[in-house]
Image: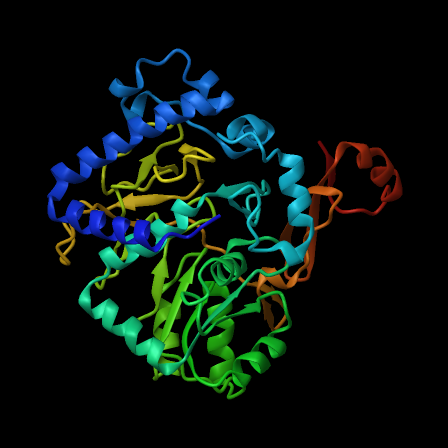
Length: 422
């Protein structure tokens, strides 16, 4: 796996050129790339070859003609889902069993897993083009004030990522991958595991000499704000960037109050392991879709488009840059609302707000915890989900590998929580 600076600059230049061409150029680039991707997956993905067998020629296809795809069905046919044949699911999972392999490429790709907050984790395979686009398109779409803020933050000190580290998650994985591929791009970056007790996280942050940017989840940011307010956290970061959950205005205001060192409002990124670069938040707080490389559809319960201004039941994601593991009209489960009016920032890209992903903190009495403090992985478990049912009551829902089901149900028979074997 190789990270090409030249290709990254190509994404940057193309991003600038596309934006300057307005809606007509954006839509033309999107359709061309969609049809090219459809042709590729028809040739190289047995699963999509079957899905698209009755559709018309790739050169004539329109987005709405393509069937909706869902995580459970795709994971069941993982080996046929990919357009490469040398990374079966068994090999990918074996690679991810070793935590020291986090961020280490396999079969010329990076492999991560989703958190499984919906109860259905996925194994996500990403070629180098995904990371090249991440850097190139972000630089192309940042405005001057955002670029100035990032430069100021870099002068202050380290970039710190606080996210899930007890598994092959993308937050920690990207930091380690870029250290492996392009160390100079990952210079002065470090990672802290969010699963640790809060006092350990605070201790590690306090030990860092100068923090420019912290990247984390809103739930963790809420805890950091509390620790800062209590006087236990002694850092003066210039910028906070959050993703993975919905950022509330109340939290933004609190963070601005307790961290007067901030050079910019808290930046919220709408992203997922399946797609790191679906959008960018502008200086007016709106998320603009990178429509030349990503398609987001706001749809109702029947997978039909809803009008702009209407809150969707879910959203469909299409990632045009990943031709190794096709993400095409993929139900991501988030609720979106596209704005009716143009954004004051002047961007030609459609803007939206996210209403889903309101992941709350776990509260046990007076103690607030991030859900990440719980180790919810086990090699014999296909899926594990923690559900808080009352202030001091929880359910642990587990789906085991088939061969373990009979044994474990008999072992836990009696006053167990919820155990299901699928």
